[in-house]
Image (cartoon, rainbow, N blue to C red):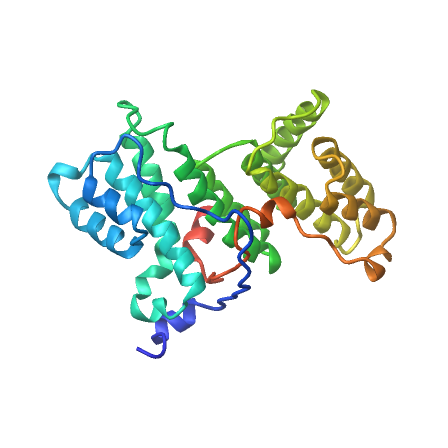
Length: 297
């Protein structure tokens, strides 16, 4: 099929591809640790994500697998990777329009996997890295919504991500986006915790640190571009970020910009290198995301 059907054209408002594969990326792990499904493991190993998702879908309807946490984890990861496949080849949406919901399925099934493994504790925390990969893939959505000024939608997606995987970096992103949307009940305790963390000195570095740097950058940039810029608050937030990430180029740039709005005319904004090392910059998002709107309500 050469064109997306009318319904899909209405939903898929924009598919932005900035194809630059950076170092690291999100790499597949050999298989689910402590798993017993050898056929699913084989699909996983061979990165046959569509076959893996299809096989899981067929198994899920069988009574014997209804509480199989491993099955749901495989499915979650497969659909997350299918989402990234659609970034590289949007024609997949012509072939299989339901892939538009692939990342939502990834989040849903990962939460199901955690719930079904809660008592047995066979899969988690040994497979938390898979959940982390699924969470990082969601940054494509956050990037897009922030770029078009839809901070409420961005934070809605972050809240859903936190149900799958949570660390202080993603929590910080939730807090800063909540501050932008006026949700002080969420934002204030998180920012206070970040201040307490900064006072304790150097924190242990994590491969998701880019999300916290992104949080400070998004919040500070928003404060500086308000109709009446809140320069003092921006400086406070950036200073907090620099305590946690000394000499981080993105935050150093933000501080210079807060001091002098003309700084941007002669200096290009540096890249969040920690983020570039961990993920591919891309977007394949629909702005007409009713599910996120309902979540905000």
